[in-house]
Length: 272
Image (tube, rainbow, N blue to C red; front, side, top):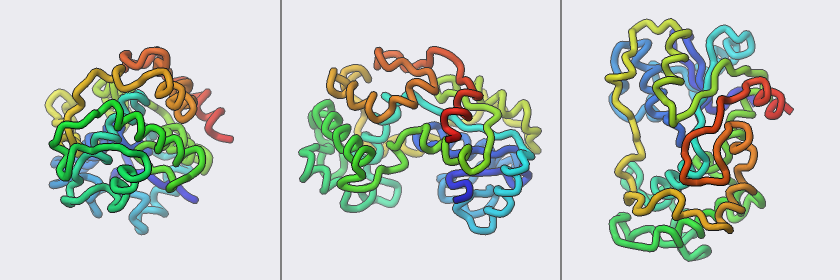
């Protein structure tokens, strides 16, 4: 199986397990900059050189050898499950993607037909009942994760613990797992141990939010999207994420974690 979703600088100064919707565009650009002294011109997900990625065949033996020997500091980044799934809805379901089309072709028409959601018209700019549509989307997310119907779960809304676990199960070990909500603190700890070729000043680094502007703006506070049933579904889908990464399940309005991640616990519970 190897190490899908894993990126590594060409200098092998650091290894990163990507978790979608958790600042991965910014992290990838920081890694690229740390080697080359410039940012990648475009979406870092589109790069095919300058950064080792498991999806690039020539990078796989280098990543595998490094991870198995644990030659470099290794990290990942997590995010509050409530805000992460909301971001997935507005970006991937309501938004037009950077190729000018809807995400995954027939996915949105399927959701409109089978789940009765609205997405704000052809370009996502029309008014619609965001709360009602999001709650119906959450039913779809649960169906994909619980029963793999009407399709396999998508990487953007499948549980963070699932992404993070593949790395551990296949022989990897994390040195740090930090929070999107405390990005500068966590990323600085990574920079402190990775010895970048080019100094990175997090205070001046732009945020490469590649999903920004794809879809309609969220019109309500986070907590308004989650009624009792929605929270029940969130627990069913993301229970392990809430528990392992210390997020507040009982209060969707609190996006901050309640404590630090226990790396030993993560390796123990996700390494089965």
